[in-house]
Image (tube, rainbow, N blue to C red; front, side):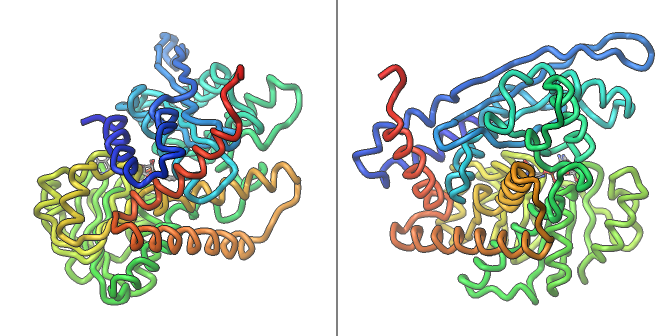
Length: 415
Ligand code: NAD
């Protein structure tokens, strides 16, 4: 199953719940508005030239400029970027942010490039998609394999071409360059905020919960840290290099410090045991947080997993068919489009601050984010109870209503 196909399956589950007046417009969400594929020639440090394939997909611009991250990863392809862009459309609408959905990516393993090569690749990619991005058109941000430094290079390239500094063209920038306080930690924070709200609703005490986290990057490490700080035992952490287990809970601050000095990998951390990769989903724990890549929770895992709550830090980690099984087993899934939306919410704040050239304190940012996230999860929870559907389908209902009503009100050009 591909990510795009999984997205289509998710849409199908929403269809019966939509009012007749908008249901026949759902096809708009099955067709990305604009997909750009670019060739990125890069002069490598040894003088050779390598070609990389890059993408930017604008799935929907019905509610405002495109918004969505840029992924640098060896598995990036058009199908994946299409799905990720569609999830951004749904996410921005579910949170009621004034954006459409977009996503970008380059098929590359950034860990194999030198810093100079990475900069050349980033700048050429930014130049190639220059035509379709901009603060009023489409605003990229970080995702897997991209960083604030990479956003700074994208902003600089766009600004050099325009002839003036335009900080609002990307978010997730360094704080000195028009970045927002709180942005780096926002996605993981949102996972904790929405996760603990839903935990309360299902009678689960975060203070005594065992937690397993897959992915220890921007999202996974911050989510793990917050659960750790609130008394949960993070018993298992997996990244691309290793799967660590510690029955009494892994010391997350210590693991983060270790990772920093170990080239971003957690392998070899001595205060826990290393277990087989496949054992990850067999551990019994109240909360699982997939925070790496998509399509990891298959039907087989859904049938066997021993847990109560799954928090989707990653985009698209659960197959639609697997989610049906989880639902029948009474396992609650907080869907990506709400769970990991803390990132895009603070990206929205960053964009607003850049446009106004007036910057907020970290407290203001966190409070405003908490309010938006708590309201969103509460609306979604209510919608799910009313319709007896999953939280994902509930979020999709709210989002599809907003997008399709906007679509109808705008009409089709030319009229
Ligand atoms: P990242 O590059 O910072 O970290 C990715 C992590 O996943 C790393 O720890 C890596 O080792 C791990 N990983 C990679 N392949 C793996 C594998 N096969 N098995 C286990 N672990 C593996 O990326 P990130 O920004 O933390 O993004 C993670 C997920 O969260 C993605 O699905 C992304 O789309 C989503 N997301 C990110 C943001 C954001 O603000 N960064 C916002 C919303 C959603």
